[in-house]
Length: 85
Image 1 (cartoon, rainbow, N blue to C red):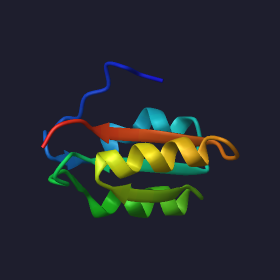
Image 2: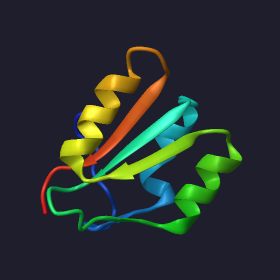
Image 3: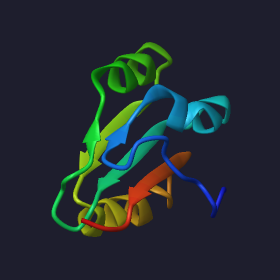
Image 4: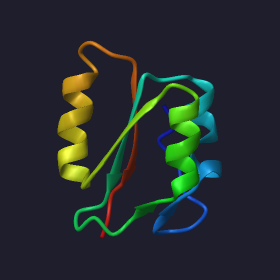
């Protein structure tokens, strides 16, 4: 858990932003794209996660939090949450 996690670019999630998460090898990464869904996940993030065997779920942050809570009961899950926009 990294409470001070910060992306390199405000509205883009890049592979560099999730390097620490990838080291933990979660089964699922839940990405919250903000209240209005303005953050975009770059295609290389999805490709790299799939290649490493990690499922990725992308949704607005409110829904992403619910998904994270549900999955955390039975799976190794991580979250990357954009909290604004």
